[in-house]
Figure (cartoon, one colour):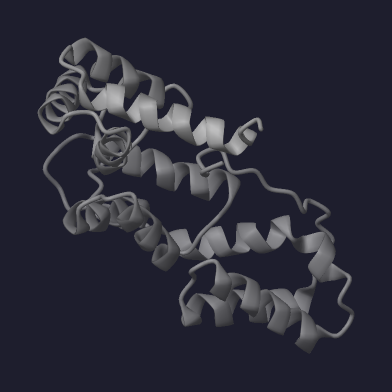
Length: 209
């Protein structure tokens, strides 16, 4: 009796992992890491977990990661900034959600705080390049919240009752990691004014498949 296709796949995967565990050539691990970077950038922790799950030897994993760091192909600060920029552009999230997402990607807590402070406009130098007071531009979360509601404007705008529209907008913002203050402020204004924006689609260029 023929073995099920699923069994063949499991057996092939088992043999592949066994071969990986016996690898001695650092170039093979480096090539595997480079392939993992083809679709999008990765955090250091994502890369380490991916290679460990593939059963490559731990010492070769660290050598590959070290080389990628030297080449600038792994950079948690650049990764975190790009992740936040992508979210703000394509699928807005509140600071709470961004903090959680970056933490799940393995970024250090202090680095996450730094990236989110940059997003809020804290600690940015003046254009003259001189040592001066930081330029603070609060409101990144507010702008993201307004953008999210604008993207869902057509659906929310069909809710005739202002109170129900406000409640639905508040719930949407809360699910996407915005603070209660931002949810209340932005949803109240949206509920009162409504919207004629018919842009209700969004994309997610850095999301996991």
